[in-house]
Amino acid sequence: MQILVKKGKEEDVQGGLVVKFTAAKQGEQKFVQTSFAAQILEVGIGQAAEVTAEAIREATGIAVAFTQKLSLKMSIICDGGEHHIDRGFAIAEALLLATYVYDTYKKPKTQLGDVTLLCADARQVVRIEKGVARAAERNLGITLARNLVNAPPHDIHPEQLAQTARDIAKASKGRVKAKILERVDCEKLGMGAFLAVAQGSAYAPKFIHLTYTPTKPSKSSLAIVGKGITFDSGGLSLKPSASMATMKCDMGGAAAVLGLFSVITTLAPRYTVHGIIAAAENMPSGTAYRPGDIVRSANGKTIEVLDTDAEGRMTLADALDYATKLLPTAIVDLATLTGACIVGLGEEIAGLMCNDEALAVSLLAAAERAGEKLWEMPLEKRYRALLESDVADIRQIATSRYGGSLTAGLFLQEFVGTFPWAHLDIAGPAFAERPMSSYIGKGGTGYGVRTLVEFVQAFK
Image 1 (tube, rainbow, N blue to C red):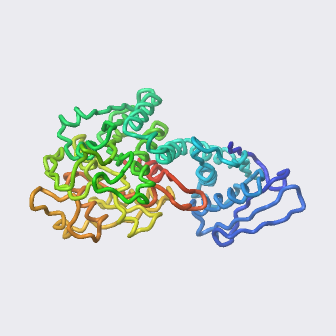
Image 2 (image 1 turned 180 degrees about the vertical axis):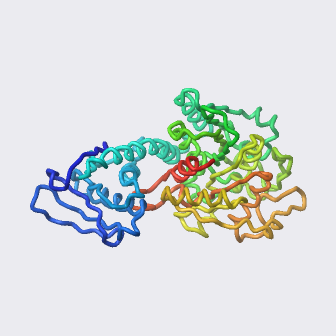
Image 3 (image 1 turned 135 degrees about the vertical axis):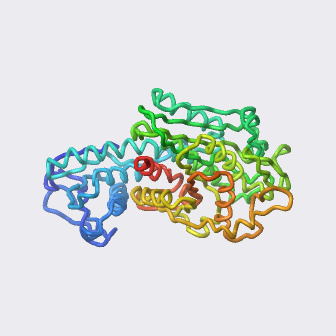
């Protein structure tokens, strides 16, 4: 699919479907027969004062579904009065997201043809073209993340994530460096928590460190950590088969980090950005770690293992400690961490836990601009007592079955020191078992890439 931008009006269209956004209720549709060659679909985006970029994205997704059903070519009228909204970008982003398919093993039956964006004001054509180009650039990172999550687990294991990082570094022409730590390197760094999770798999773990360096030196830096469990069987605390079926998505955080870094040179932040992924499989075997084990993490704290299916926090413990040694201005991690977060917030909303108010505000604003749903949750200090262990410095999981996403966040907080830090539990929205919106369908969603792009651009 190509997105073309032209000066013109609906009367100029010869055949196909013309999509117009109207002041009707958001999502409301009206099919209009005309006296000229094209047919018109009107989609409501609300009154001018309430129009948002997300309303435009949703309306575009509705138009895509309508057009594909009728097998028509589509033109979209881009004229609009909301000067604070880049209509070209919002429409193009939704078009690209809505038409994504994972076609490695199954070819799609129908694909959308070229789409034309029409604008009557010639002065706005260039602005719309720039918005379309920006959406196309960013979509490369989102597509990479979606492809990684959608790929079957026999195709994506730690080495594949490491190779993806190397490929990103190579394509950056020196702006991004990739450092891959092998098992022996992690042993030297004392990463007992990460290596405990990895020891049950036939695939060797890979600790990935990507570094983007700006053209001019900067005192600021950002560390972004992604959970990289390429398949999660639950280990010896084996998941039920139904729960295991989608566990190829357990590296959704890592996929978001790799998606960001694949486009980071186009964003060109003026500060250093680190991308950190502790990549491993969590498998049951004669060498797997066990409930009852006590492991020592890289920061020296001992962890009592009670459930080998709570492996994400183990790998993140050592990854977060590694991040602190880089002395960043702030640390952000993304992880498909807890089912409890899905119970609390549903499938479409990620949970945010943060020890710094300014950082939380910035991430929430970035998610709002990106059109990704994020909700702040508390790091309740009293719940920390639920992680006390009789035999180690900390329990891996809490004594209570309630508030599991909160106690998981408190566990992670033990490994970030005093650095400003935010944890995004993306267990719900990283993988869609039903369509998430009119423009995000089933499967890997690429959740987090859009928020990270917005956050990185605003971070100072």
